[in-house]
Length: 317
Image (tube, rainbow, N blue to C red):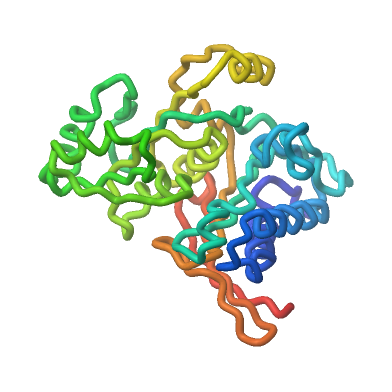
């Protein structure tokens, strides 16, 4: 009998993501972010607790005092196994998107061996991400963005004006928008959900060359897990607004508050990454329902396969 390992759980983690998406279906377009998120969280926790492993939430819904379920440090699984895994998840990436029935809401989960994921505090993170086939250590947050764009155009054999840059549409990115305008690059704005923004750089059909901006640190770790699977690159740095956030980060084991993180620092070991579409998006189709049958569209990527697989599944519920 073959000994179980991380990759034995590919289909099981896929199902966790799919059922969480289905749980959200009734809340799409209902202007109720809280109920949509709660449905995804409850489903994901319920399904994880059916799996034969010892799981620890390392990226979750927040710290224990702020999240009743799937909080950082929560133990999940049947515990009837000697296998120990870390879990990073965002049960509903894009709660506002879901509530308004807009593009690109996802359920997201990653599974790794013990101590695979950076214990990222729930703070902002400065991020740069690119796809495959670039020189090692291509990205540097301390190099002016204009220079990074020019270098990228050179390696991609494109005009600077043809470089597509994905940015989260927030006032805090006004300085980035000015640079994009100055360089005459193409801007790809997203309203929410910057996991998609980062991973899209490694998926050629979407045609995004660079992701740049400030978003959540937990989402940065999740994006890094799929970029590791696909051979992309990412560099990040945590941003703290006050001494309380810095103190919490130090307590969680962050030793250097100014560190520039590469993918290998964010994802230290093998990983499985799964996302399922909730609403229609650039990457995945949203959930479809026909009477009692749900059709869901997912993607799965692993560090073993080094490629992305799209999966269409049907559930009768």
